[in-house]
Image (tube, rainbow, N blue to C red; front, top):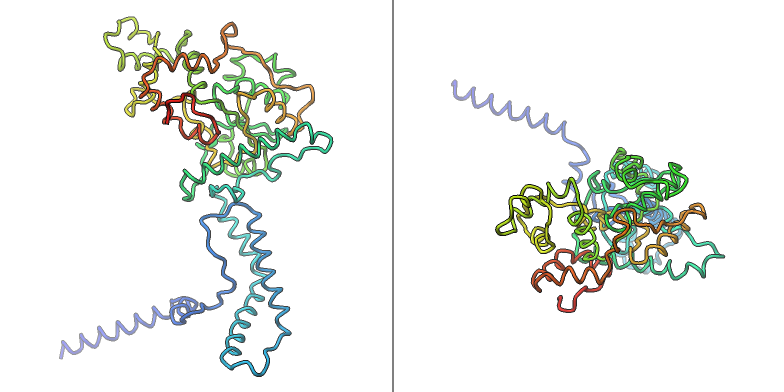
Length: 429
């Protein structure tokens, strides 16, 4: 008897739980589970994409939806002939009922799009050479005035070609998975709000003089000649993009003109080595020099181990190519791909150190800078020393073995490819 009562109690308890579960279940989910084929109130389904690139895509999506509804309105007055088989008529009625459901959703489409846009405020970028990235400036490159068209036409075409090669390289070699722009990705980008410029700093590619130009544009100085080297790099007069909140970063990436200047990778590397290791330096000698000499120099003197001075180029390359470096990477010889994230941030202007004067003044023209402002030509550090040229670069790399030259080229391969630089030595593959 007691066993029977207990069994009855368990059955009643289970039944009560089932009733509560049914009441709590979402009716729409029940319909989805029960209906085969067409989902309840499914509306107009758009194919899913990896990510959304810009607000223009939202507008195109709304336009496509509106076009679909317009087609339905035109089709409302159409009637199938009586001799059409009943099966086709029923199919037509079924399609019409789905299309009429689209009418009911037209009003809610824009609201849903706005809600969806709010959820996309994380900076998700699709790296594609065709679609415009979410962080592309509204104006892309500023339009050339008609009277200047012939003067600047070739430079404008060069910019389009550089961007095309960069995008195609990113599309081919970089993952298409969703990526999020973090403050780290924009930590090398300097902001000039007056002329709405974002400049990604690439060391040894004219960065000191570009900072001078930004300071003049911002009204911090009247001339680039008045600004000392230490003021440029240690004065903290220029704002960095990672100093803004997410809304500020997002706004500037979408509306400001983004630019970077790059340099032939081997030449940039030799320039950095000469600057940091062939002249007295209170940071690079004790931090990098001591570690490099200690690891790669056989029978190093106590004086060299103590000061870190006198690092040889071959030792420096050994450090660079070592996967277990005794000291970390530095921005002066890091990849442009890591410094500026060109596959994540869609730069509007890509200049080259080799054509600096022409590219820089073209950029200043595009942003409407004062006509009396031109890019400075002076060399403010070691001004008596010859600039690093292709000839000087080849002299330094002649100290290396063919294997070391090849591995160095492999190290900077993406920079060579992305910015369309030729192989610096014929024996490289």
